[in-house]
Image 1 (spheres, rainbow, N blue to C red):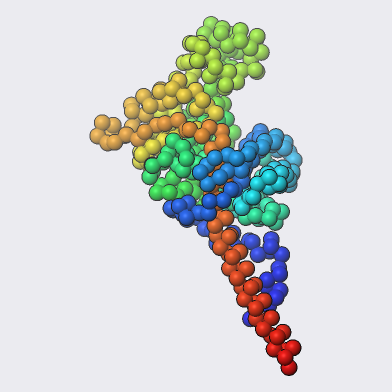
Image 2 (cartoon, rainbow, N blue to C red; image 1 turned 90 degrees about the horizontal axis):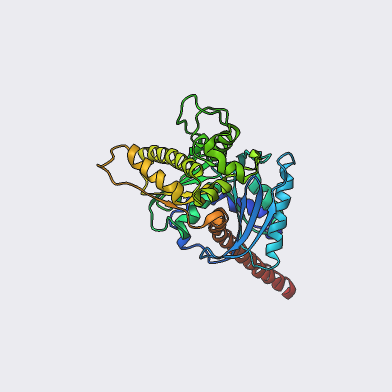
Length: 382
């Protein structure tokens, strides 16, 4: 029989079993999720961005903090997240927190198995934050949360089979089918950037050679530009003059800006990156056969300077070209806030289950109070 202790246990001790019931099923569940505000957190190598997001994907308020240095303990990053959430909670009725982490997250969406830019190694992030916050927490890979946001509110609306590719420092990705993020058996599906496209090619920080992201990413773009500038190539005259000879100052956004202004070398570099992007997309189409590829991340700001060559290369390398439907290749619409918005929206699914469980606990407590009052009345009448 239940005792009064069952109803007065600390909230944190009762939340974990509720969260473990979430599982991996999101199929169509967003249609019945409560229309309540939630907080989305996007954790990258340089920043932690937090925002309150409503049920329609609108950002009500946004905060940003620098990511603590990776040499510091994981608790320092957790402290930053908690501070941002508590700050937002002072002004908004927050019902859940979703976190998009730049790293591998396990299938249970609890532990960050590995984060290349932070000191997280098999870190139980969800459980630790759940103990410190008064709302339920959901953790997922940042590319998964970005893909979810684009499917719900952005360029992927109406698509049943979507693949998102995020071009930043490296390449991340996510797969979404029939309203469900495909995370794989161990939670690390979508690491497209480490497919080998050039055997024996450029060394990748992952330890292998010839990974896709070594030929189509922000790092690849900057590396090629700096090599040409260091060689004092005549085609690099424009960018050398732009940085006044300080080759280390060359950056991806600078290359995109110069390309838009007509710099021939920068245009050619973006075309090269775009062609490698198209080759990789054709390989993914052969394996996954989606209806749409959404290209996000900072490098996608180059828009048609990048995506145009990618579409051309995709058509040239697509298996069975001319005899099969071709997937659309589109630029993401939500920009750098996609991961934050998606994390908040996925957290709304946890809020629904948590609210139901909380309501059942309240009902049980009320029944117990009625029972206890009846017992007291009987004792007093004797």
